[in-house]
Length: 185
Image (cartoon, rainbow, N blue to C red; front, top):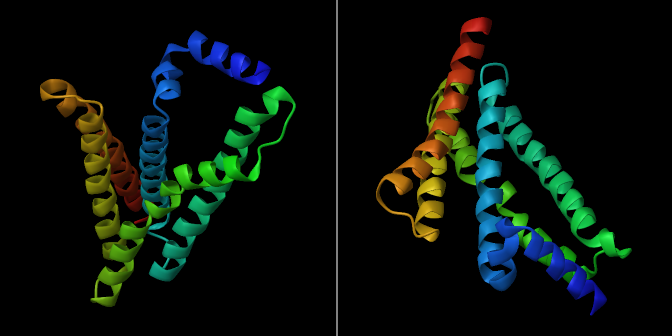
């Protein structure tokens, strides 16, 4: 009970997390959405940085391995940060729940990696396949932004703004890839 009061007091002192405490399913969905967006951005960054130098297979493996490392680091930091404050390590259930809610960080890479490999198998050059995969990540970011905005009940300009911000993160990766290509070209 003491731990619940301590956690409850912390949540009440932090208005950003207050609604999540009252609606655990929403908190879980929000964490999954955040993990998917983060995973998609990291996927785009790896594709942008390595798409001009790496062959398709190496790039695909680099994306998945990079995300696995980021996911493990995020999982570790979250579990330690959330559960050790009371002098206890997280239990198996907490670990499983945390793994499930952050797994989209890795699964977010699947469609871009599949598009990368498929484009290459269909005859595109490694560089063109990387561009295609990068475009797929931009589209995914827009979809994630749109879905997050809709889940928050946003409409009109606010929904357009949230969706546009997600898309602009993807466009930033396109600019990065272009600059790297010019530099190495």
